[in-house]
Amino acid sequence: MKNLIFILITLLFLQTTTANARTSVSGLLDIVFKNAEERDLTNRTFRSFSTFHTSRTRLFFDSKINDKTSVFAQVLIDNYDFQLFAAYVKFTNLKGKSLNIKLGLIPNTVGSFSPRTYSNKNPLIGVPLLYNVRTSFSPMSGDVIRNEDDFLDSFDGRATKGFPVLYDACWNSGVDFYGYYKNWDYSFALIAGSMTKPLQQQEKNLPQATTHLTYHFSPGFSIGGSGYYGTYLFEGLFRDTLPIGKKENDYLSGGAGYDLYYSKKHFEVYSEAIYSFWEYPYLTKKLTAVTGYIEFKYKFYPAWYSAFRLGMYEPGTLSRSTGERVKWDYPVTRYEFGLGFKPDRMILIKLVAQINKFEQKSEFDTEHYAIQTSIMF
Image (cartoon, rainbow, N blue to C red):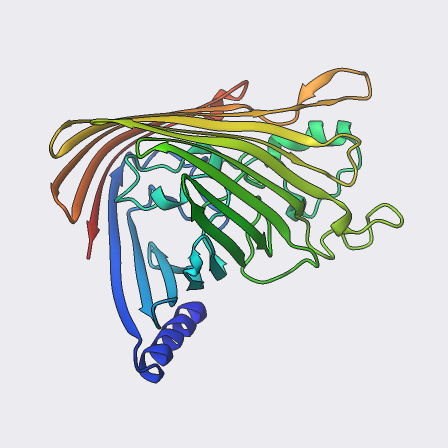
């Protein structure tokens, strides 16, 4: 609530003290009805928010100071709990279209899903598995795991509760330099947290660096590449238990992957995949994973479409002291099917099924069936 009050006061200040400022306020309301008895293991955020919650509202505040400077803020209200989702200053056309800057609490700088994270742009209800799968890896649990055997013996209790791969449920404070040149667009950013654990407040000494580069062959076909690298653990997280002479900033995480978009007439395809890794103080090998999805959408009538998304999460392996190689987490496959109807340009209604399958852990499997109404205002 304090963050909400702060941003409202800030925007009001900008509006009243800048003669040429123009502020607009808009919103997006989502109402969902689903099979309520099914527990939600794979869509919940660190704050237990979920796109399958009954009521979610986004408020957007956009204040244009002048032709090159604007302020944007976004507040998420999930079942009446508030979260400051975005708050940044945007400087555009600093060198034509080739140089622009976002500074503050900024959108995801890796991958291509961020513009489609909103329910009126997302053809389904869930976020792609790449952006919200929760691994069994969580240094924040407070437990110090000192070898591979201990890690592999205990991950069952941490499954679906740990760090994600690319986290879309909240954004990082940082600075993003981006622009466009001919058929290319690029982004280079420094963020306070990491792609695994975004932060509003700086809690570590070194930022994580990210980059995204896309080539547009045509309006209906583009291929991009993303990468990120840097520290991800917070100062003091392990207190005095780290190996002698080591600090949290000595341990890195990173990843690299692709994104693809293709469209022809009423047919669209999106696909992304990332190879990611995390260094952990007490493991001799890095934790690795490959995560991705492919999404199809077909508009078969002016106001109707169908959609399908297949997502996968495949963790790497660790070696036990016996030499046996074991996956350090449960692989997950997600199937999402949807039918969408747009009776008005401000309203979208979806009927969706989401099925999550865990390899060797069938008790974690879930099936969500839901209808969502999204209303723009």
